[in-house]
Image (cartoon, rainbow, N blue to C red; front, side, top):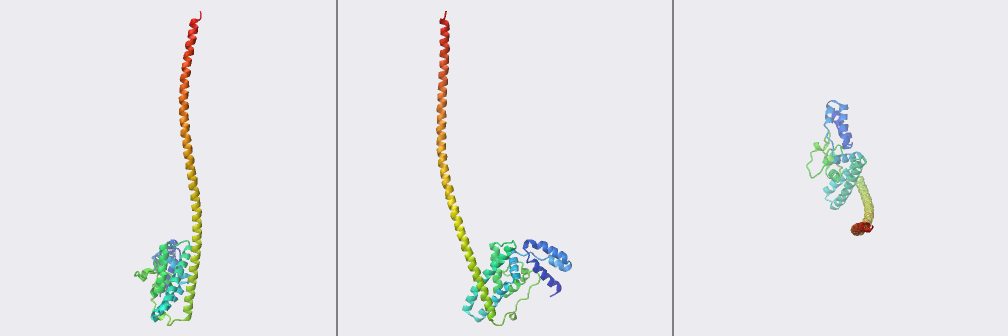
Length: 283
C-alpha cells in the first residue's frame, strides 16, 4: 500500500471515530492541513451514519476481535457438521452480538450521540455480519465503516468503508484447527454476555418496579383530584342554588319596594288633600 493510501486510511479511521456532528468540520480542517492530492482525497471522505460510527467506536475499543474468534469456531463447527457445537456456538453468538451492540450503544451515549432503536438494530446486524461472514469482519475491523452492514443486502465494500478496502480473508487467514485458547476466549465472551444480560434484566426489573410505583402514586393522586373535582362540583351546584334563591329574594324585595313606594305616594296625596280641606274650613 502506498504512503498516500496509508495516510488516507489513518486519517479516515481518526475522523470516523469522531461524533458524526463533528465529522465535516474536522475533515475539512484535516484536508486543508494535509493539502495536495492527499488533502483532496481526504476532503471527499463521506460522513458515517450513526450506526456505522458506533461500530467504529467498538472496533477501536478492541472488543470485536472476540467476535471474529467466535466466527472461526462457528465455521469449524460447520465444517465438522457438529450439530451440538453449532447450537452452543449459535447461542454464544447471539449473546455476544447482543452484548457488543449494547457496548456500542453505551460508547455512543458516552459521546453524547445516543442511538435510536433503528440505529441500535443496524449496529446489531453489522456485528452479527462480522461474526458470520469473514468479508464483513474484514470491513468492520478497519474501524472505517461509513454505512452499517446487513447480510440481507448486497453491500458494495468500496462504499461501506472509507479509504482502502481490506483484502478478503483467505482460508490461510483462519486457524487450521480449533484450539483451546479460542474456545476459552469465546466461552469467556459468552459468559460476559450472559452477565451483561442478567444485569440488563435486573436493571429492567428495577425500572419496572419504579415505573409501577410511579404509576400507583399517579393513580392515587388522580383519584384524589377526581374526588376534589366531585366535591367542587357539588359545592358549585349548592352555590348556584343559593344564587338562584338570592335572585328570587331580590325580585320579591324589589316588588315590595315598588308597592311601598306606591303606598307612600298615595299617602302623600291624601295628606295634601286633607291639608287643603283644613285650610278651606278655617275662617
